[in-house]
Structure formats: structure tokens, C-alpha cells
Length: 600
Ligand code: ADP
Ligand code: MG
Image 1 (cartoon, rainbow, N blue to C red):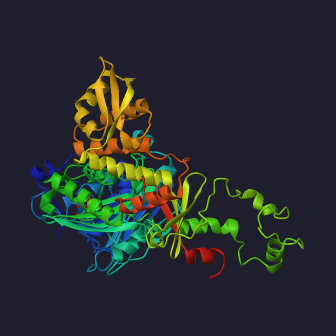
Image 2 (cartoon, helix red, strand yellow):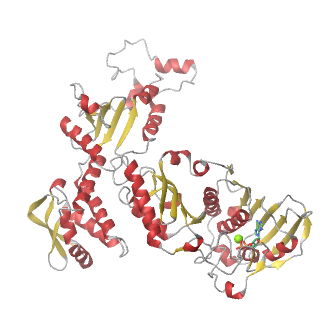
Image 3 (cartoon, rainbow, N blue to C red):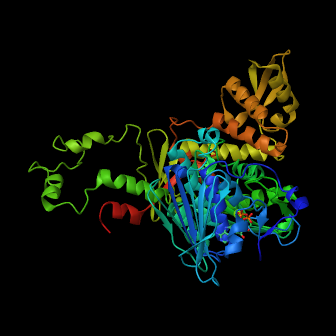
């Protein structure tokens, strides 16, 4: 389609605002242009965090001489055939990017259209356009941007360090690369180690690109998502809760292959994982929404980073539903590589590398002519063992034969409790280590949630009500929720204007610090804004309570109690992780243990 200047009445409807804020936004616009031009391979180079140099070269359709001149004029685009802004299928449509970049930097564009004899080159220096000159290059386009914002020092001042800007550039490239696995992306230049993502075709292309961009560990520790609701599709990978991060930088969300940072989408993600992750931890995801272009509006944000959905409730429901279903299906599975990671962590400490020379090996493994002690541990000659904790005094392996029926269960038969928190269980083909505190927290949480859904929970009456002083707002919020709190076994009554009295607590939580619990719950209630659904807030309250009532690390369990905990874990939804996203157990297969000892 030819490039044309948009009619004024269309221009006036385009969301106003600055397109070029920082080097990463330049890279985003140039790479999007390359993708719109059908490129199969895109090379990006930056220096000085993109402030001194950004160069993007593609092998797309290229531009003819006259198109080149139009391309750098404001509001000129080849991508908006009609006048409708609600049916945009390309990444670009505003016709502003090249003009905006040309206005604030020194830009050289070289482009060759397949049907042209040779390429043409054009220079723009802070808005001053030079004449097109013949040039030489293969079909495609290269845009070189030097000295971004040199003419507007005030804006240069707002940029962050070279490193921070270079990171933002890499993040932008990674997002675009995830959405276009069939295109090769290379990022190089003095700002970083070079990246090169080879093109991926056919089945599993997106998965392989995700492994290249985010890492193989993510792909292994994720759940496939494929859902549809009323013509809107959601596909991609959602990380297991145990594979979490301290920020949301590893959340890659797309609408029709357009990378977004949309508050609606991040809110839906947070809600979907609310049950299985602490508030300050973030799941890693790559999720692609697919919907008709008429079902959302991209014309709300100058950098096209947010969209407006025609039916936000549908999109939110689809995301939450699809992820919750996946979590329910995979819930008992902690990160499958946790066991392997533990094994790898053990290896360097416990096993000398077989690649060592014989001499080293010999001196390590055969310490002395000293007689071998039958126990092995505690030999004075074995200085190396000083760094290893001796078996703690509370190790109490059950000497009886393991219960055969329990061996058949997924978590096996409990054999010992170590360090007053770790239950070691035996299965037919391996061993399981359970973090009893984390496991109990999950069980208590699921029971409390059942209480919220109609299964009344036993309460215990406090002999002396606990009076908790709180700001007026908190008292009001707690009073307003008194009925629901009662459903989870917590009875709270107003006690004057600035305090509440706790009269009953859930029996299963045992003795607890009611003051601290009430303060935390008040915080929870205050933090959620009016738009958060009641059910989500109450689930969160249940999670807070579960933390208070769980078997703390340090409590010794009798063998029957340990087995009961394992059986209850097996019967509990999402039992593979506590509600902060830490695993509740790890499993080592016998084969792994044998490898650890070089038996395989
Ligand atoms: P938009 O992408 O919104 O149309 P731009 O200012 O980014 O606006 O680009 C203006 C026009 O220049 C595009 O519509 C396209 O026709 C042309 N163009 C820009 N970059 C390229 C490229 N890499 N390959 C081919 N054509 C391009
Ligand atoms: Mg563009």
C-alpha cells in the first residue's frame, strides 16, 4: 500500500502524546516498522545505552525513493487504508514515529525496494531533511539514529544511566522477539554481550523462542495455557508458582502479538495467582491474547503500550479462569526441577569432580592408612566433614519397617523428622523431603477457604477477649467484614471507637497472637481497593490467618502425625507449594541419588 498523509480529521483522533521518550521507545518503533515490512531477520545495534547510537536493519519490503521522503513526514503512513482506527492489524498506524525520531536526533535511513535498481539514502538532522541520494544495500531498510535528544538537552537529562537504558532496550527486543518467533532477532553493540535468537518455525516455535529468551528453566517450570471464551483466545505458558520473581519484569503479555504493559492484564494475573504466591512475588508468564481488532482499541496510548478492551470483564475472567484451571491441574506439582536443582547443589560439595587428575582424586578419597571407622562420621582424619552438620539430635528414624500402604502413596511413608521441620519420607523409587511448616500452611489455608465457602469452622472462645487498638478506619473495615470473618472462625466486635475485641478464634489455629493477626488483616482489608472482588480479599485474609496458625518449624511430630500430614497434603488442592509460592516438598528419585554417588 502506498504511503499517504492521513486526513486531518483522522489525525485529530489519534491519541496525542510523546512517542519517543527514551532509546527503548525508538528501538520499539523501528523494530515494529521492520516487522510490519515483513522482515525475516532484524539486526539491532546500540551504543551508549542507545543515546549515541541505535541502528536497526531489516530485510523487509524496503521503500522506493518517493516513499522514503514521505515516511519521515509527520502523519504519513502506509498502514491505515481507510479512516477507521478500530480495525488496525499492523503494529504501526500513527505515521508519527520516523518523523518524531527525526526531529530529535541525527537520522540516516537507507532503503531498497525489491523493484528498485538500487537503494536510496536520506538524512534528517533534528528535523532538517536532506535530499535523497543513491546508495547501495540489499532489499530492506536500515535506520541509524545518532545522538538522540542532542538538540533537546532538557530531555536528555531525564534519561537514566547508559546501563539502565541499555537494559530497557534489551527488554523491548525480548518482548518483540517472543511475539515473533519466526523472525530472527540479533541485538549487538558495545552496550552488552550480543544476543541472537534464531528463527523458529512450525510446531513448538513459540516454546523454543521462550526457551531462548526467558530460559529453558522457565519452559520446564511452566504450565501450557490454551483457553477460549466467546471468540477471545489465550495461549502461552504460565510459570509454576514456585518459579517466581521479585518483580514483574518477566511477565510478557501480548494482545495480537503486540507487547503490552496493561494494568488490567497485570491485575488479572495477580488475582489468578493470589492463592499461591505472596503479594511481593510475581509469576513468570508469556501469554498471548487473540481477539478481533474491533474488540479492543490501541489508540489510547501514544507508545501503544496499553489498550482498551471492549469487554474487560471477559478478558479478565478468561485469564483468571485459564490460569486457575492450570494451577488446579498442576497444583500438586512443585517445580519439577527443584529436585534436580537440589541435586546439582549437592554435587560440588559432596562429590569430587571425576575430571580431576588421579593424584588429586587419590589424595581426597584415600586420606590415610588409618583404619576405616565403621560409622565413617567423626573420624578425626576426615577434616572435610567439619563443614557438614552432624545429624541433629532430633533425628528419630522410625526403625520399624515402613508401612507398605504408605509407600504406595505419592508422598510415601514418613521415616524421620530432621531439624524439627523436615519430614523425610520413603517412596517406592525415591525419597521425599517435606517442609512441614510450608505444607501445614497450605493445608490450613485450604481449610479456611472451605470455611469461607460454607463449611462452618469450629471456633474456640477466648477466656479473656483480646482488645486490639486500631485506627478508626481499620475498626470500621473490620466491623463491616465481621460476618465473613466469623465464617473463618474469627469473632471480632467493636470495642469503643478506636479498638476491637477478639472473642473467638478458629480452633484449628490453636493458640495464636491475635493482636498481630488482627493488625495484618486490617492491613489486608485496607490495601485492597474498592475494585478488588470480595472473594479475593477474603481469600487473602485466609492466607494471612494460615501463616499464623501453621505448625511452626520447630515443632516435633510423632510418626503418626507425620504420616497424617503427608496424607492430608495428598488430599489438599495446590499442595505442591505454600501460599507464598515456596515448594512444600522436594522429591529425589533413587536414580538421582544413585547418580549423586556416581553409581549411574
Ligand atoms: P507508522 O508505522 O505508524 O506507519 P512510521 O513513522 O513508523 O509510522 O513509518 C512511516 C511509514 O514508513 C510506514 O507506514 C511505512 O510505510 C514506512 N516504513 C517505515 N519503516 C519501514 C521499514 N523498516 N521498511 C519499510 N517501510 C517502512
Ligand atoms: Mg511505525
